[in-house]
Image (cartoon, rainbow, N blue to C red; front, side, top):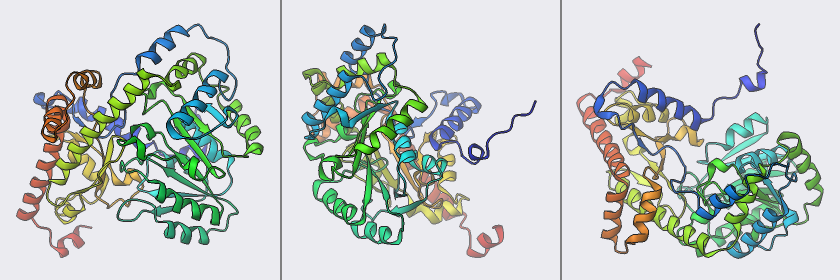
Length: 451
């Protein structure tokens, strides 16, 4: 019997992160060089390496007997805890009635895009998960390329919005940002919110990396700046190193009463409710405690040490420009200085650059620019600096906290050797590309002929 797949699904490509994961697994199993049985240097996957907080683990164990369905929008204890969490950490006075719990922020963003009519504005570079969702839902969308500083220009946002004729426009704001690691400060958010009010732009503010902000006093939620027009999403995956728990939440804008019924209808239809034991475990994670404060402080300090090292090491490569992260565990590295050399080596796209870096002898995994909604010929890449044993590094940090710059460098070298070795491999790759290009330059005529 032959099964026919719906054309809408047929047209959707495999998400870039899963496609890359499949490619890496196949490559690793096929590599014939025994000295490379360690696998690869992993800069591609954005997953916090730290253990799930002990109090969250204990709460899950304690609540494994909770087998009943939970309320659609989340158990009252969890919504109350999330309300207090947002008041304590983010200064937002949010009633539990404005909070809806879902199986991860990815799903909740998808649900919001389902119910909100209008054209989506997607700033680029962007997290690789937004565009596939937008396309799957057949939403109208427009890219909003960011400025040279990789942040949204309010003037450019206004110009784009004026060209769009939908009554409602939807801006996806990712702050702190994946893939750049950059943070929008209060003034920048106020300037963006001014345009949003003027142009009737609804904001979906993906703040999943909020707790990773290195100087936490600098984080401001868009929900605080533009409360009447912002949906704020957050969850356990990055701050609590619990991506596998699949629990996120969305805070609805003030006075969005008419949307609640529609949203609950979507949630009930698609997944009924989030796993009840997981919700009870999450209560412990969102409750204010000394244990969680220590966990957040420790993990963000380690992320900052790793980020500073990665930024400095990549910036030391001739011609490479990198974003200096304020948060997250990513930065964006711009390798376009080597565009001609790469083309002379038959590397014409960012996807081909990613493939060239993963093969022997480099064994280095990155996420190329085309996956980040950049032009296919843009040789930029997201670098995730989390390829280390998070449990061991967490303990080592607590035993001996590095303070001086030299101590921090030694901390990275001793605790994240694959991060150090991987950056060395990237350095070697571009040195070899430059040498190869110098020896075998492709003339303009030969490039034209071959194409």
